[in-house]
Amino acid sequence: MITVAYHPIYAHPLPEGHRFPMLKYELIPGQLLHEGIITKDNIFSPRALTDEEILSTHTWKYWSRMRAGEMTAKEMRAIGFPQSAALVERETIICRGTIDCALNAIKYGVSLNVAGGTHHAFADHGEGFCLLNDFAIASNYLLRHNLAKKILVTDLDVHQGNGTASIFRDEDRVFTFSMHGRHNYPFHKEKSDLDIPLADGTTGQGYLAILEEQLPALIQSVQPDFICFVSGVDVLATDRFGKMKLTIEDCSRRDTIVFSNCKNFGIPVAVAMGGGYSPDVRTIVEAHCNTFKLAKQVFDL
Image (cartoon, rainbow, N blue to C red; front, top):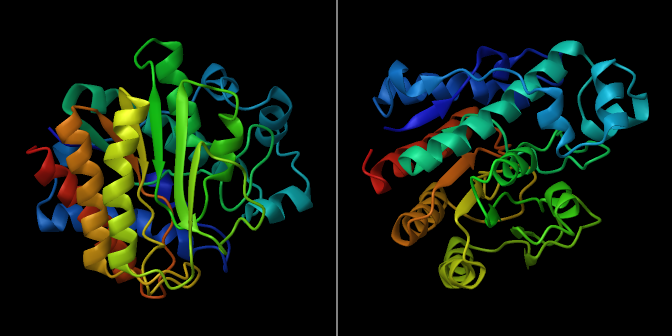
């Protein structure tokens, strides 16, 4: 069974000028249902995180100020959204969705969150549309409950997973792998366990050759028993900020490489969508929906 985390709050409306990044979260589940990739029975709605789940990863000072609406204007500019209680609630539900996806992946092999991939959130601050770090919270949940012993975070968003790298800098049980644009945001990169910075204009052929070589070797070396996959579609040539030259087909091939390796090595994988900023939202939705379609095909669900 393929399980998909979605809650209506994912598409929480924001003031004018901030709505575009949220639009895809409303359109993706509708398109998946329209194409018959999933049915309503495949969708589950997560609850909000508990304080305990948040504090496994984030500092009390940061979380208490966020919850109380006491973030400064400077902090919210770094995040990129205006402060609101609904925004905080949205983030806690998205992050719990990623925990639930991890639990479902252990049961079924793969599970996907319509949102998530909030890899720019640090333990004590947020950046780049990210308040809380969903895969860091989910990884700590698995470790704390003895559901995984070694986790590989495979971050293929075009932007480096700087928050995730920082959070797990001294955690040997989580290996962070980020393959990203060398000159993309964030301009100050953290040190992942493995960073592969790519030149502007990298084509699908070059990108996929690197991934096909690196990922199976990395799995054999790290020996993870769980994989977190950030499947950002901001690697597309159409993306406003990505600086890569991948096509829709290249992006699908990337996802197939990840899913096939997870299936072949017998490793459950939780997937979060990550970024995507092509001017035509239909391109974003198509690329993300392909990820769900390929997960279902590769895992024969």
